Length: 394
Image 1 (cartoon, rainbow, N blue to C red):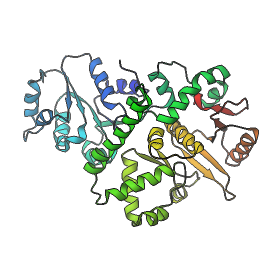
Image 2: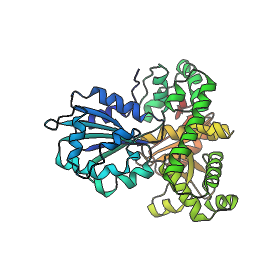
Image 3: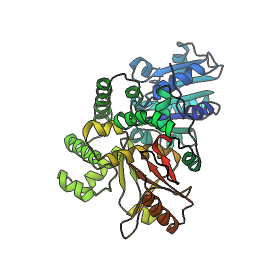
Image 4: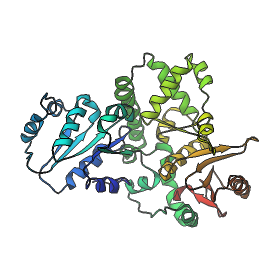
């Protein structure tokens, strides 16, 4: 049974446009499942689904005369006299496909819908050659609302933070708390969420991590010291929610700073880690300050590290907040911090295992000093305090 993701409606709408759709994201987040569902709903018989892991499907595009690709597709029942819907899964595995794809887009009435597992590779693949011809969408592990959908729990979440605050309810909290605890422990990869036992969940998480190393790190990078890359990744997991100190990481690993930076760039562009800049009125100052590091999924974190409960919770909050827009953190000269700021909405958000009045008051003072319009403490435990949003409502 197909369970809809939040991005589904956007993808369905984009089918109405001529541009190529590129759906990218980390492996095993559900891109192929979403692509198959969209394919099944296209109201046309002139469509074909191709998987670039299949060498036979790759052969379709290996023609020096790109017009002959249409003849190859005719063997799959495609008529060039009608609009064609061409769905291509794992497009990063066919590096030669971009030139013929561009030619076919420019010369025939074809709607392309594609998936690819790494922005690191796809950004090079789809650089200037498809400029103005594509829409790119990203798919991530499930947020908590989607997690509940996969569990068969239908709870309407509010979009505005002011309404999330008013959604607090002790009975609803107690109902959702066991689900949130599971979400924190095992994360939001769909296959993991749908697994029935803890043992299977751990096995799938191990497989996801190993697949990332085998199919992304080893095949897409030219890193000579894979062990050092792995060790850096494990150090980052232990530093979830902390500021990045590249010099210290380089010293610990016996690597040069440029090498560490190249590793970090790869990790970010393959969706394994995310970096958050500090909040500043100046873009130059924002870029210059230390970044905070977060990991793609709390299940992956727990697989390799027993980090502090507060940092794990903060990472889960980050993974849910990033859908609301750009995120920054703030720290003043005396060391007082705001965990997350949504600068475009002027909202400050502080993450605490349990909200108490002092946390709310301190956040109010800091928010006022930065001219932010709204502020809320996000609490894992239930709280009746004003200006508190419960994690189960986020």
